[in-house]
Length: 92
Image 1 (cartoon, rainbow, N blue to C red):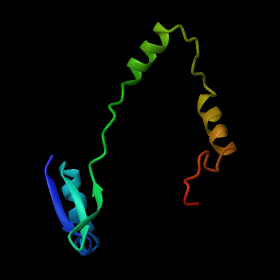
Image 2: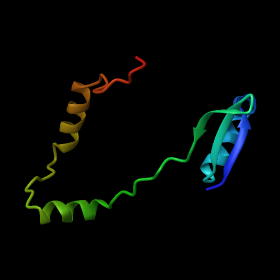
Image 3: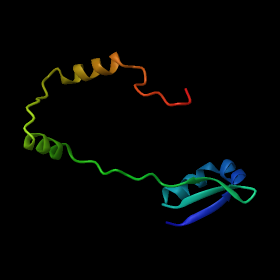
Image 4: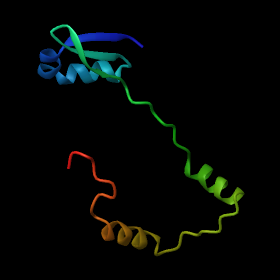
């Protein structure tokens, strides 16, 4: 992973370029008066699994859940019942 050092003024002035470096896999060290104040790295991507793989895992573990014609309505009702954040960030 390449490391790029940039002044905070440049990071603020050209955020799109900063994000382009990070998206390309670089670590960016943002500095104030040549002292590091932040390090920004690309997020680690968590590979997902296909729905067919999830179903196979559920069947292998003996789960008997079925998705019926009311499933979408049930999901929508659950979301609507909990519109507030379940774990609000500390800055709120």
